[in-house]
Length: 369
Image 1 (spheres, helix red, strand yellow):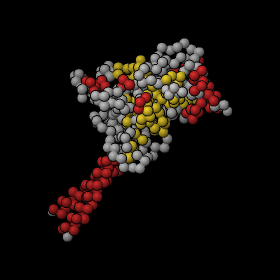
Image 2 (spheres, rainbow, N blue to C red):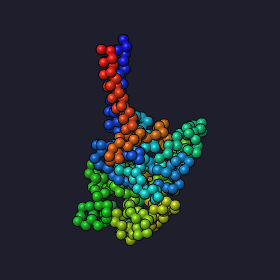
Image 3 (cartoon, rainbow, N blue to C red):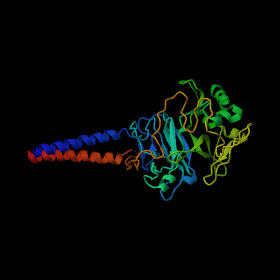
Image 4 (tube, one colour):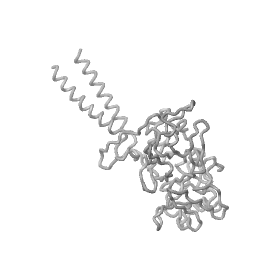
């Protein structure tokens, strides 16, 4: 009887260990610093940047990083309904581009339609009786954007670009894409394309563009009181002669300067409002655009769909609190390139169990022969 019992136990351990390894093999990849890198099989990504406000940092809660949460597409984050199994809220930790400037980036799978940027702090939930899962202070310290369209804009999807250059932005972009002169597209010529699947026409991805929030574009949840911020993607030009990072509303930097739509990123001050060329200035601070809807297709940067016809699954209910988990993954460094699979420490432990189990089987057989 003891021989059979030991054999059954060891067999169960072996099967369970192999199952864990199998699950981990399809998980998203995390590097040595615990930050997201695309998993194997993700063939197309867009590098997008995020400028995190200094006010989103919290020394008490060790919040100094930016997080990214998406609920559809490759490596999708964990959802409450169980449809995706990636990192729990607040999602994946973003890569650091320039820590002093509060600049972060992520190589986002190209099929992810929407994203929420945050300060990588799980604030927990606020319950209907007014109490908090963790604390009121932690809840309020957790900051995030609204649902942000992150796959591409098309003509009519975004009021800021629809109004740019006296409403000629998309026309000029299409002329550049279809013609021989690409100068209008500057260093972002690969971002522009003619969308044919849904017949949306001239469109642009956000590859190497930067998302900047608008402090005056915010929503407050009626039940929880949680604040989320809107904003927009802009062309990211890099550093100027003074060592300041610049961004703006046109792909050609010199053209953007001539039209007064270049801004300087300053973590300690609200960026100036870009002036719309040939148009009265729109009173929408920080990014100069208005993302409160009103476009032809109903898609906007405050939670609109990626495009008017794409089906986008709804995010978790109350994404500000999302899953109950408080950590993303084990991130033991094991590979030469600095990238390991999410839960690699768990996988290593499971593998060790497999080896031990195998040795125990041999020992048991020898012991009872």
